[in-house]
Image 1 (cartoon, rainbow, N blue to C red):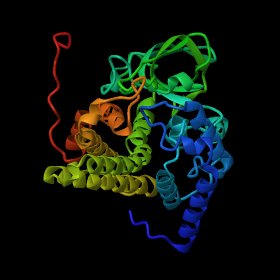
Image 2: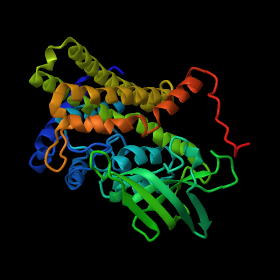
Image 3: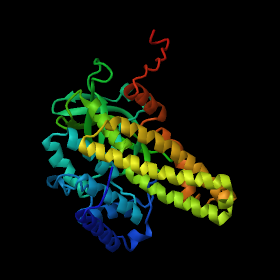
Image 4: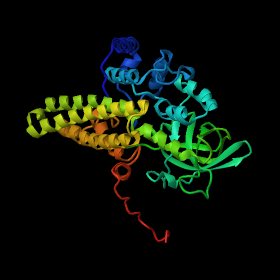
Length: 399
């Protein structure tokens, strides 16, 4: 993706920089760089920052104006992402609705869904969480067992979901349910929009290896939602879910990948402070990490361009970008510990971790969430390279 700045784009970049410099102050400035997809630190401050962005018209800028956006083009969206990362602003609290559900509703939702939900997402007034994975249906999502049964003008939902990011803060869930039990695995599934604050919904945080409580499990026991809150049609939820996951694997990760460049800078600083920067192997590994971080950025740029302009196969590009980023970031996490040396084994009061320690621990899960590396490699092999399907394991039950 070529981003040669026209005079208009330079003016837009300067506008973004000026606004961030004027508003990223006080408590917001004290929390620069705080939060991540696996870190719910300072959530209230980050939510207040979302509202500040919304008031300035800087949330969901690529959405149509009628739904709270600014009709910004792909170049403007990318410039905003780059400047946001450069300013090291807090990680947005409402990213699930802004970057995942919102684009899904724009692509698959009906006009009522868009009018009802998108403006409140763009104003940071309602928070969302994804409810897809289950204890027995993660990578093999089509094996999900959560069911929704029609009861008059409502759906009744029963089942369990797991690994739902920030569900404890959510006002709504977008839930993948089985609505036609006798249909083929990928056919009888629907995506329902379900209010979180009701009897029959229980959210339990799951402490992660960093001590955060952003991941949650959700229990639905007779939970209800209106019959019309189905995205993409009844029993047509599989392509809708794949669209949402494609966004998660691609454009949503671009902002995170831009922040990874700061992590590499921290690794370089750590190596200098410990004297390890003079070692040939360390220098080579740091150079590779720096290069990998830039490759992540350009993969994200390419995917954003494909999604917005219809170029190439965004599914294949998303899978390739996700596999590369997960593998490279895990390698960076290990490198950060070598750069810090013995200090990497020390933590602060109350198990307080520095940024590189957080990267080392949290990156372990990146080859799992958003589609496991093994599954993504299979998709690339079969659908892009045209290789034979991997033999399926047949259980005794299947026989």
